[in-house]
Length: 615
Image (cartoon, rainbow, N blue to C red; front, side):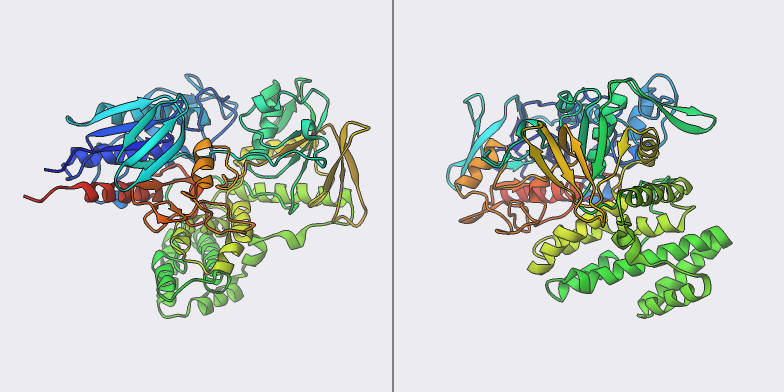
């Protein structure tokens, strides 16, 4: 019989919940090697992780509620499925929750929730808490689960003594294995020095919202750095979060201020706005990939380390062109013609003639420049502040016109969504040293920001609101790309100066606020546990000296790698691995989900290590 042993799960957000579900599911299925004791360590201990249940409803998820599920199916775990349960959409529907007219408040009044709705983050926190209790209630006989409502601050691991975890309350937990699923741990700010004038007028991390912004007074000016999701959260917190309201008047969106709002200056390094998420008629991928497939990435991996720009980017560009023509054909000739086109293009891809086939479609019907859609920076107008602001608002409005048409109604959005549809295949390219070192730096430093700008933008309603706030004069974009900010101690305010506009423009702000939340870094983590492991050489940087990759190193099995090699008693899963792996911040989805795949293979490895002799 296998010996008794214990495992710890350190961190109980969605990744920790998935690991727990896999442990319980495999044990219930009778897979040999199940632990007899599970120690769960998390100061909140509810399962919600960073999705606090006390957040206001205007802070929305950026994943459709029909795309979120904590229950893995056969596409991810094969025949090792546990009990079936609801996805987030079914869960809120079963509870009679509805979406109010404001588009974000979830409660008993309003219209039915659709699978394609973006719901408040706090609702995901409630779903995760419910899911954890469901799994906990299904623990099989012979397995004991203990929940420690404290943070892990240190960890020792060796082959003879197992794992000893020190908690913030001074106690110790001893196990044989540990899963580190600690999520977004945050980073320590750089040490203050003589050059840090204005530190008390700078918000380096806006979360948790809206509390972190309470210091900004009504009528003051705040300069927000970023055009992405976090910047939209900041804007919502400073407007709707302060009592303002968006209203429809004669079909037009208007903003009714409360008087508590500050004035907002918005800028970014690139100066190019994110593209808004388009309407979707359904959850399924509209136009499945033909050129950049999992099989294509596997062939590239077999040939050795991949150069992204040479090997993968051309496939991505042709995939965008294919999606554009498939959508145009659907709109012009109907679904049968679109399916025939897709079959013909797939055959051309198999014969190595896909580019020629798409070139022919371009000549017949007109096409797109996928590189311009992918980047967009060449179109920026930078004669002066006014021309830049006009260009930016016109660009956002044009993109919103496409987003309102939806994925099936806009060939442009169909082309862009092709980028989203291949992200999981790119995980296969990145993992386990798949990219050549120079290409890895380029991928995380330049490619990923472009990818995020193209398809990880805000909900389109947020951009409609952004335009409305600009028309009301509450938000301006006067500085162009990458302005310089310097604090004037005498005036007690920030001075911002354009650096790319032909005619220099200057603005003043009372506050400087980051409109982004940085990825966790292993070498400057705010987590006492990560700091200790890094200091003692139990964790190391995946790419020392890199300007783009700050992750902890892990091997192909997700064991953390330190100065003495990888530790087979530990697994490190989640955002701290963004570098040796890719795209670690998504909540699990129905169907194939890398979060489920990773949890399953790591837990199955532990079971395999511990299983007894077969009868």
